[in-house]
Amino acid sequence: MTDVRKTLLRTAADNGISLITTFMWAFDYAPDAAFIAWLKERYEANGGRVVFVELTASLDARLAREGTEPRVTMKPSKRDVEESRRVLLSLEGNYAFNSTGNFPYPADWLCLDTETLSPEACALAIADRFSQGYGLHLWGDTSNPRG
Image (cartoon, rainbow, N blue to C red; front, top):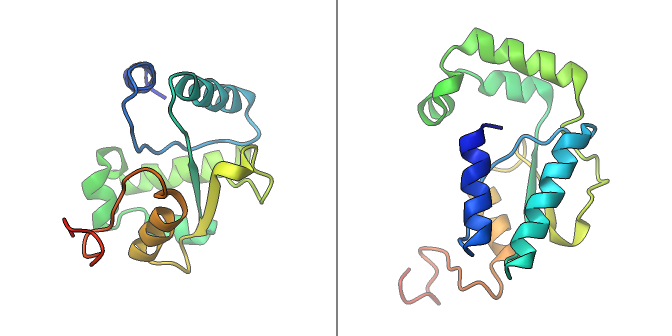
């Protein structure tokens, strides 16, 4: 994780700014667990809440996604498709990126299989699980006056 990203997350936590971010968490790598614990504690100390959404897919599915238009458009670092695949294979062989149901914060966790669910279905599941009490609304929801 870059220093810029760490600074952004720390600043947001300290100032009560809500964020949605992604993090590739190696569950068997102690520094990752320590960073997540630190960030969660920091947000909670400032009255915030941290929720976790674990997105899972097989290695084959993740390899197939490398080089697709959405991935290279949204993630400039993924534009070198062969390098992205090489890095993915290297990391996959050295770390555990799925919790396999043994998540350290189960009360604030949702696990979604992105091979069987569309991005839209994942978004709806996340909103359904975590929007209560946060004033979040789905666009197109007829009970939402803005939707």
